[in-house]
Image (cartoon, rainbow, N blue to C red; front, top):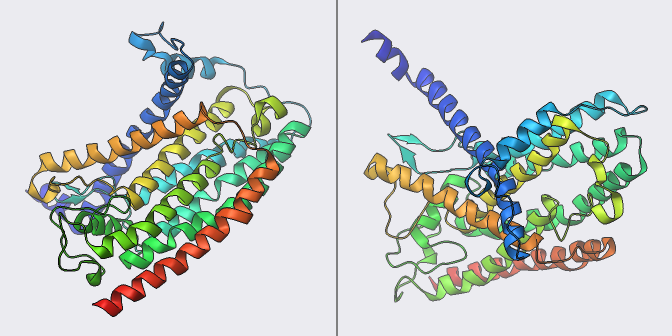
Length: 380
């Protein structure tokens, strides 16, 4: 059929499969954003021995829809004296970068022969850092354009917080690239499929990896001296990256730009209606995107031990996609758990943690990884 041949042309095939993948991932993520709010309230209720949302739908499952309708119907109030242009675009600047990060995350292996990643960039992690760092501009512009002291203080805090953790966030992933030898997120996942996850290097059937000398003879149940040696810097990278991601998403104990007890609501104090909702949704979208990056770099992405990829059938492709989002949900739960467990740091404590501890730790970890890799090369 001529129409079928048209759809199977490489250029056309790439376009319509990319559109389908984009629509699917946005639909899933926006649903996860809405129900992350519900999960936040239920987890906080569980930790505080309360009930949480339980009136709208079974166990409050329709509560996110009710909240969305409420925000849509509220008056969009704009205070006098604000810079209306920047005041209007700031919520979008806070929301869009988190969505763009999802474009390079491999959320599955393949489905019907189509790779489950929207944009398979060779420098995918650089795209993640470049785009995610733009989110702070939305917060800073919201604080400045509101022409109010509390939002302004929240914006200033956000910019200071960004420069204190952004360096350690970037430095913490360099050991991952040194071991895998690539900046492509899909290839990093494939490395973990063959050699075990970065935070769990034991693998019962180790296969060839990007770095050949990582696999040594005499491995027992997939555990070798090389894997144990490299597991140490990987755990350091994982801890530094995880903590820095809490600061990236402005979550407790690093929610200083909001700090309700000090700044009312921080940078979004003057916002209402759907503009406020965009800030709210942007925070949870950033948590989902950050969790996806953590899963991809350190937790094996879509892979599970002894589970084949999508090349063995479309059912396994769906299993891989479900595995990825299940891991993301587990990391999100950790974000929620920490919020209702730890107190907020003081601002000077945050700056000291970023500049005096994590920056040096991440830098030393690079030298540690380089030393281990050099030693392994000399042994091979």
